[in-house]
Length: 350
Image 1 (cartoon, rainbow, N blue to C red):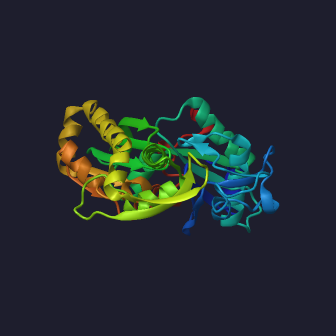
Image 2: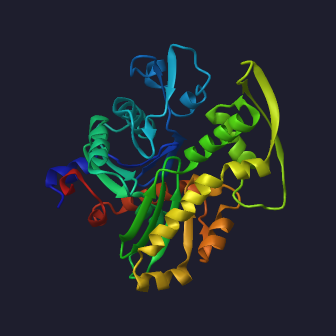
């Protein structure tokens, strides 16, 4: 129950929600919806955790430096596989995003942060500590599949099964939802970043060419696919030759990139199978009608929905604006934060 003092503070501060992703961070504010969507990247001076440009080299500004910064600067992605890999830099990033999204507040806000369903107690405590040090008055956590279900407006409060597959940057979350709870869940650390690395390794092995992660991401977005669509494309790529160490360019085809992406795509499909194998039969029966809903930036890979539908034999739908699904769900919870506390986690509930 909210104390009178907490109630008074809430009159003068914003409730802020953060979809703290490996690739991108989205911020929502109660009453305003999503107000910020930037890469989860921070530029720091090498050998320190000091953020450059008076603490503003975060997000889009920092991502432009990835792979292009001089020796005394590092562009860092402080989250790996959906969890905090560098505590101090993540703290600086969260503090920056809070200030940028809501610069006028003088009272520390309450923060609602999404977390992977497979997160450990230690990783959960790191998120809470990081948010508190970044300026939060109180921290609430929501499992990403629950937030995604709310974000795509599934009736998750009903006694009926719904299957969410959220493919982010660092993790793929597969969860069966019913009565606002996770009936079954399966979290793997294979997602968009793993797809990019698969492309890097393929180009390196086949063409003896080293490309950076931003180039790999561009290849994936431009000609990547999980299923033969009938239209094949070629793309000119550039990198460093591994034999003579000089800049070189070559062409790759969409067919080759589809081959490169098969291992992470198969891992995602296997995660869905593993979840369904553990699903109670009555809820499994519901899924014949409700099917699978895909969310997260990784589901924008062309043909991924068709591959899953063919393999799993269930209806598959890609959510509208899948990248913002979790953030939209967080925004929905912020509007009813005190009423929906029962589906949230706090430091006290560990």
